[in-house]
Image (cartoon, rainbow, N blue to C red):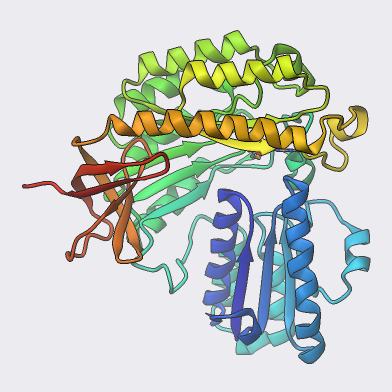
Length: 439
Ligand code: SAH
């Protein structure tokens, strides 16, 4: 049988889709080039903003005619549109969907296929174990021996409840995966050629807080650091309130841990931060950035920002603008506020910043950040930096610096999976170009 996966949203979804592929390929399925050629179609969905949810509905509706033409087609809706709680309304609205799967869980699909196809499927036990996140993963054929950088979820769900965020409602309560399972999974990936692992969690620095027997994130990273063949370790996303010195020291001291921190500010105004239920102030965020920069020289820092949160005035927005202008962070992921069902802000706060105004604020920050990034990148010009080459993109090799900067390199040699020294020859706000440094 042939399967096709459509993935929307965050790195966690990318990782979840990989697990689906792993499970299905153990059953003997192979990847289809197009949805029209598949016997099984998986839509792995995101609902963090209304626009993502709309895309999922659009994609889902486009499958209706395929299912009509071929009733044997298996349609699997997965991810945050489905959520961890039973959703009868969704089932009634999309009766042509055969299987509904919560985020990070391919089990319902695997069980459905085993039930329907039975003995004809190959390694059913292995597929079931992989689907249950047992710590083993068989990379899909397309990625085997080729995937350089992989994601490993370490904290599932989230219990923080930021006022605007739907994720806790859809991914369920925070749950750290056992350290031995994470280590097993990381080894399994490295044995299949992976060189870099990014540990994932909605608040990754809360790793282990739900289980006294588990290490801290820093403790876990120390254990991962011992894996031979693993070259680089990253983690995301951090929350300003949980960023410990232990973790920063571990980034500073361990050579495999890359100097890059993703720590969203979301807003710069104290009242907006309170309304968002973020739990820190503008001053505390600024102090945190200084602390990170002090501990980890040369660190790069990424943030997330939401503009147009309910009640955000022009003056309050200016606080966000000033925060970014002052701190000069490497990356800012920008979003316009989108009310999400059941969240505190959707229930209790009026979405009163007009759309044009959200766009205006968004573009102001976009322009500001473009200038900052261009300036930071300009300092890389003529420098020689170690780049882990991930893949080939339109006749050039593509990789990343320790600080997570995207570098394109022209070379006829096979550089895939290698850490090469590249001399930077051109920089822009979003990427750089380099050439192999003279040996
Ligand atoms: N747990 C991570 C990721 C959350 S989702 C974290 O806390 O950073 C990724 C980003 O989407 C968030 O950081 C936030 O900036 C944005 N986001 C979340 N909910 C949103 C909403 N309702 N409207 C607009 N942006 C939102």
